[in-house]
Image (cartoon, one colour):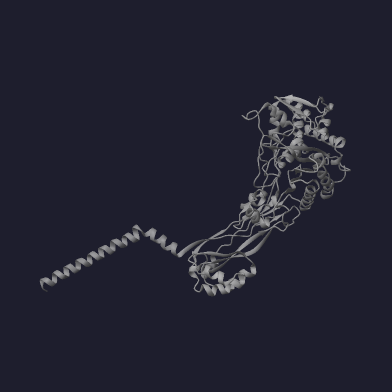
Length: 564
């Protein structure tokens, strides 16, 4: 072999050796150094993680098992334009089913978008018909549509579910996690869209877990009665809005709750479209107001329980009293002379309430106000509860005159739910209960979780509660025939609250209210009626009290209570 040939072989072998070395180094780098990363990329290209959402939402029932919500099976029709081979043909087949002209569908299916929604809530017939077409690039996804068979009734209690499946307001918002259920995750090979498992892998797809059912303390019969009476009150007295709550004072269970104005949860998007989102807010537990003279129940409870006065205490009502640099007068500017505590409650004397509050002092008065739960949420299981507002001597904006003003329910803010809970404590031997609406949860596996009544505190003793209940009953019997119920002793108090406006109070409009409970010997219900800006009369004793009476007359029938 010639020297020239040997040199060529040596060079060739060297080149081959260099290539082998380079390939070896590259293979080592890919398999060892980048091995984990490359394997992850390969697996990511081959496998997809799919979240299988939208299990059936839990149902809601009243205390007697009446269904309050409905889940309707619908289908979401989706398209993936890059995978549709003939957009025009697909549009012509889909158009008649979706009731959309093919000329309008074709440009959408032929767009450069990777995904488009053709219909969010197609009917079962539409969904099944499109699925049978088998058009590549068109997917049919099952989903549930929440509807409310009772419409506006219960709107502020139930809330609503958005198109994305999230609960808002009321029970739907508060118990969204429990009602929504649990989506399932699946990892495997998918089709071109990356959103559907390959046929050979479908057997491994898990099933989503449906939501839990809720059984409420609410009585639909009482709720319908309350809704009707509230509508009647708005029409008769020309009120702009109103609230009625019915509660069991022994447990805090809510039997009915109605608000006006209201909305239809089946068409909640119309409220959003017209920018009327305030309609979603419940006036019963989500908005605060000055309660007026119904708050004298709290002032009297504090005075009795603290030992500031006794049940037979009397005072001379001069019709006016000055305190903290402010002059206070009775609602009618009259003097009533010597009065006992039943007379103070029956005549609703502001001067008497100021006398009690100033006699016990600010520290004692506000200690009881806080103990009754004012200025803090009740803890009710409804989304969107307001806290109210109570200024105390520790606040920089508190003034000495606030003690007098607060004693008869002005200058502080409460919710109707806070007010009825406080009065329910008087009916319940002084025990303050947490208001609640869900009696039990029923899990998908059949497990039942019972709700237990919760005592929030004992603001007054049982003896004080009994004495005050008797006073309130005598006040009704002696001064309030429009709140009496034949065959039953009823305890209650009216209220007429001025409405704060910039610079003072509205000179014309008021909030009229009445709160009471019965039967006196063994209270089983407490009712609060609130009417906003009644036109016929501004006084709670002439409007809200009559609504209370009509409802109180029905309670023995609805709850099976014999005469006392």
